[in-house]
Length: 244
Image 1 (tube, helix red, strand yellow):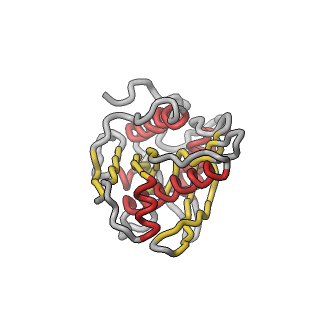
Image 2 (cartoon, rainbow, N blue to C red):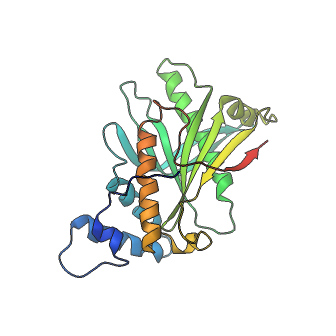
Image 3 (tube, rainbow, N blue to C red):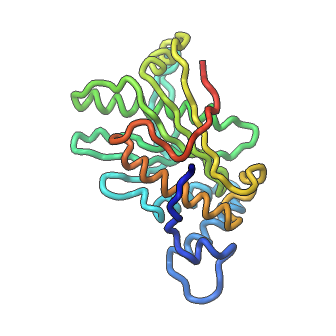
């Protein structure tokens, strides 16, 4: 069974295709403005990321020691060469040891001819390596593996991912060695009425908007508790593919 609790976004957002007339709450006005901008992006703008930041803040992703950040550039060793990986948007957990751990990464899917799954895997690997480097600097041991959560955002249509990344995989990529372990990638598409049109329609149809809001809120709960309850995610995720 999927998430059973109703979304907590405002009735104005959930019951109106477009901004209704009359006095509205500030967040309601902002939602429709950001959504419209993301649905009809201008060249060389980041309207999709702007909409995603607003949406995640609206649904409580930031709070406590969790902060949203933009445009991280992370060094990473691949095939003996140091490269720079770009992370569009991320949720980071801060603690007393200043480990600053990635708990969610967001990738904007701009180009239809590119494979977002490959990008998600690469950025998930970079996220684990960043987390482990911070742990080593704080005097802690590297984590042998971790579930890295990700969202691929195409305009207003998020798709959820979970990538099981191991240090063995990170080390194999650093030295161009063939990975000895499989990498499991899970994907979840919100249960909207028409999944074939989902990437084009996004959150515009009201049924889609309710489903996506529900998924994002449920995901937030699991990201917040990711260290307490290992290996959980929204719904049942089908295996997208296994990387060998």
